[in-house]
Image (cartoon, rainbow, N blue to C red; front, side, top):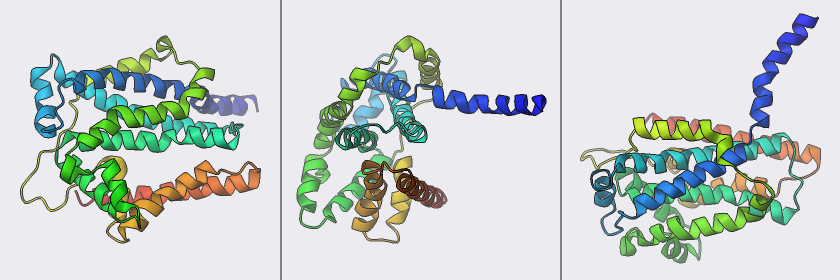
Length: 290
């Protein structure tokens, strides 16, 4: 019995580490890396010629390839760790916030999605152009406020990527900061506690260049960002409003108004997991078209 108990305890060690690791602090450190490298990249970026200025960063800026890769990969890590942090919080049942505070904290998820998404659009490559075109199409599908919403968020046809750039470097950062600021006052993130994460991110940035997808003539299908593929596939079967607005809002609504009673919360979490599973299947189907 002792051997069985010891084996069971050893199997639980990774799970305990997974739950105990400060994922939220790791996400914040990754965000700091993204902001620092983003400042370097932004100094060279020209909204009038996004693709040209992005590609020349690697030629003009000292160690430009590294800084651009660091900005890209640290941003991806930030978003993934943010999702893991949220999942661990719900797993440990630590949602002991008032409803308004909980909604404010969960608002960091759509802010994070939009930060990543606008970053792809700003690249100006085939992936960014496809993402921007689909986003405009979805905005215009919203009844009554669609044109105004598109004019506020994108307006790529008339303004290029200028509005997207402002949202990326100012608007979304401010909104995300306001959403998470009371939370950050309670919890600290120290660089020395995440040296492995920092070194791994830097190592990946040194070894791998950030992706750029030039336009290829004759290509019939252009995929958007990886987190956008499920939605892109869903647009093949449903209207832009249902696929691009209603469907993404379903898990957010369940997350924002997550019930506090145990039974209702379990059903809500199962619904979110089911949505994620279906979205993963749609993403896989979209990948088969690439």
